Image (cartoon, rainbow, N blue to C red):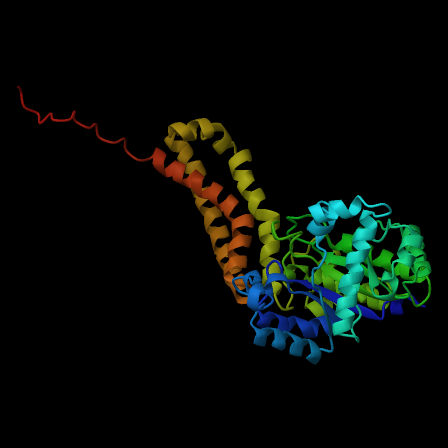
Length: 431
């Protein structure tokens, strides 16, 4: 098996539990996904699914309507992208606290029962139910809870006949040999078909704003090594995950438009078996990028792909907003020497120094204000209002508020002192 055909299926993961895009944006990027080499989607609807009945309370404020879900599936078919829905049954909180419930504790007290057996019984029950309702469906499961279960226990559980494990590893230094051994273990347990999962974004920090492209390229290159050394015809495909939150309570990580260059580079690497200069050129052509920035840690080139304006503006904000405000507030000698926190609290400043500080602060605020306004408009075209509000509040407002606070303090130092107030009842007359 050559590296370039190592993964018959290449699925792009869409994580809708954070910053879900409008359907209009999906209509633009699905053809791009296909052109870049994807042939499937793993869609994690989460609270964007239009649940009904007693599950309706799970809906997000801007959840997709039934007709919008139908349209998403139609758009995927038009771009020849097979859709696999990702539905959480065991989430991290369930498996992390496995055996903590009272019923589970009592069950675990019985001889020969264990957490592994409890986990496998649940997987078996859910998979059996799915197959009874949809016999032609194949359930996939993340493999992390399977890795340490003894081989004989896995084989005897009946689970290998019901599901296909997805081996996930998002690191840039995959232990290729260990991964091959794990694949062999699963095969010997009865899992005849396996899947891999890499990452093109959302895996290097909960509040990461820009994907480190080189990290993700190395991750995919090493998955190609695993595929080349593992049992032949075992890996059915690879899921390129693009997590949008680590969980429902965490902040947003890289927005989907910001991750498109990374996704493009990773898909093309998988398709061609490496990232040569020719492959790099192909990526730049797909994205409309003339500079060679797609393989740098970040790229500041604008490009012409759907959402490229967000990519360019978010890059500017992430790289330069906070640092430019820090430079003024913490390294400008006039601010640090003549308008320190001590001076600001007491509204003290030498009039000459005001002229050294205020114009620069106003200029900086004006430049960033204009750029942020452009970014807000661009975000509103693709995302719902709650996403726009959250991203700006997390990534823009803190620095802008620091700048505005400095200017407010400067203004207050130049105001004339208030007139003294006459004592109560004193009308200026002698008794």
